[in-house]
Image 1 (cartoon, rainbow, N blue to C red):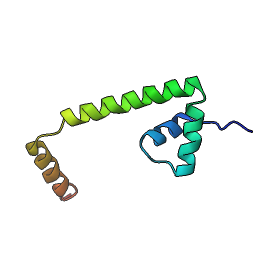
Image 2: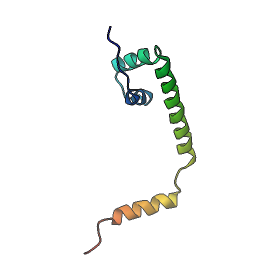
Image 3: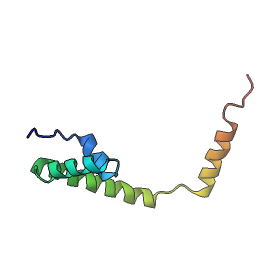
Image 4: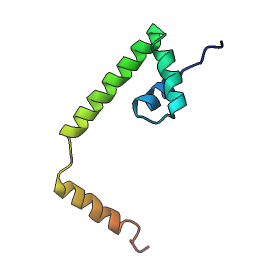
Length: 80
């Protein structure tokens, strides 16, 4: 049987649930039968969890959101 080449992108898509059922099974088989891929998987999973935690702690204020929205509404309305 020919070995499936799993890329970093495949692992990341797997972590974010962006693969089909068939792809998921193939990626899982590859990850858990290859110690290097398994290590990469857990490293990426840890990074995702850290980014998620930072995102939860660093939300913009309502004032900042209002300023951004006001700017976006006025963008492109300048007269030349």
